[in-house]
Structure formats: structure tokens, C-alpha cells
Length: 349
Image (tube, rainbow, N blue to C red; front, side, top):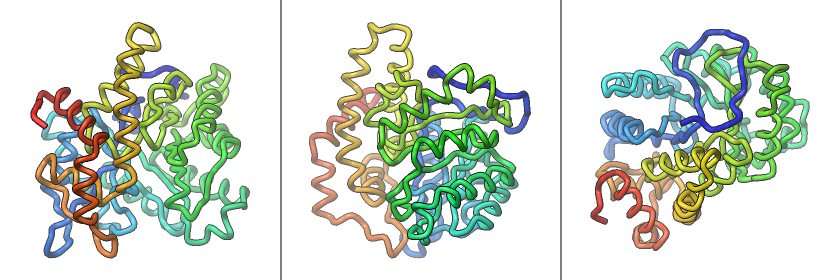
């Protein structure tokens, strides 16, 4: 189901898998316990599990430990995801690939490699290594995204996550300028959690005059405004946003897909809003608690729920055993797990 406010295009045909409003999950990269080599079987299993629930994959993002992956490993994951999706009856599910790197040059190279490997879209974060020089330099930040968008063969999503980029926080004015001036930029993920910023950007890009005056380069890539958390999904759709890219989608894909469906439908049928609000409350509490456990906590929960997950790559530590047990037993986690199992047809907690 599509949310409101998706803008238009100028008829350019590129990827055959449209970028649509909805829920996207940054897929963890799974590793074999003894060697830390990629665990492709678990990765493929998980990608298909989420696709079956209506959640789309983002590979090599923060949750995917992109900083720990080589160029070859990123390419391997794209090939594995595409093969698994096609074989499981999901040939139209798009793949978003994280292509952020330390330099503009390497970022562009990763965009080209992602396209060659079969990805459909890229998502790009600014490097935080030189954040001291970049954070307050709007000209440099803008130049980075302009050049990447111009040279990337795939449409680009802006990834605004101060926590992973040395505190660099793109404001709504800059993101709006990039949307206006760069037709190959197809959206933004706001992991800054700034609801006002999301509202301002969504209002601009969903306006009829924006759609008419600033069409996207690619027919299949409208400009989507996506939250980086799912704790405000319902109100965000009423502010013309388009969904979320969220780590919680790995743990509770059916619940998140249902929340998006209900919230989008409530735009036309207000009688559905109370149920959307009820589910939003459960998911918001789960997001608040589980997000604090980050990558290691998410992998622990996947191991607990599905039998795979494993550990992060070193030097990222595993979750402390006591913290893991506390996370699992927390009422916010258990309430979310209960809803997820009800919606997926598994009622035992």
C-alpha cells in the first residue's frame, strides 16, 4: 500500500524495481563463528523472511556493519540477496545498498560497484572521520552529495545519522536544496530522530509545485522521506512522509508492515486510526528499548527468535549476557514479540 505524497518523474527509465513507500530494514551482516567469514545462508534466509513479511532490504548499512565489510563482501551480499529474492518469488523487491565511504572518490566507486552487482538504489552517509572540518561547512557537505548524485549510476538516498558520522547533522534547508538541485537523489533517511525536520522536508517534496518543477531523473525513484526509527511512523504518514528504514524491522517485520498498512489506510479511513495508534504504542516502546542494544542486541534477538544472528565482527563486542537476558525479558520486548507472533501466525511466546 502506498502512502500519500509521492512525487513525479520525468520519464527516465532505470531500475525496474520501483522505490515505493513502506518499511525497509537494514539487514545485519551475519558471520561464521570461527572465521568471521560471511554467513551467506543466514543472510539469505533473513532477507527472504523479511520479504515474505513485506519488508524490503537495505544491505551494508550501519546495522549491516558496512564499516567492517570489504568491497568484495558488499558485492557478494548483493548477489546473494538478489538470488534469494528471485528464487523465493520476490523478483520485484528492490535492493538498497549502503555506499558511504571515507572519501567522495570511494563513495562513487562503491555506487558503481553496487550497480554492476545488481543493486537498485544506494544510500550514502557522510564520513565522520573529518567531521571537525565538515560539520559546519555547508558548502563542502552539499558538494559531496551533489557530486555523488551526479556520478552515481543508481539513484541516491541521503543518510542523515549524526551518531555514525561524527555528529554531522544535515538540516532541513540543506536536504531540501539537494532534493531541488539533484534529480538523482531519491530520498532521505532521518536517523537523527528530528520529527520537525521530517515534517518540513516531507511538506516540501510532497507539494504539487515540487513535483511539477523538480521531477526525479528516474521514473522508478520518487523522493521518499523515511524515518530512521519507527516510533513515530503513524504521525509521520499524516505529515506526508513515506515510511521508515529501521533496525527493528529485522526483529518484528510483520508488526511493522502492519503498522504501515494501517497508518496509510487511516489517511482515507479515520476509523482505522485507533488500531494504528494502539500498535504504534507497542512498537514505539519496543523501538525505544531494543534500539539501545544496537547491533549486538538485534543479533541476539534474532538468535533467540529465529536461530541465527551470531556476533558482530571484532572489535565490536557482543552484548553482555546479563544485558541480553534483561533485554529479552523486558516488557517492551515481550509485548512486541507477542504481537509479531500473532501477526505472523505464531502465537507461542
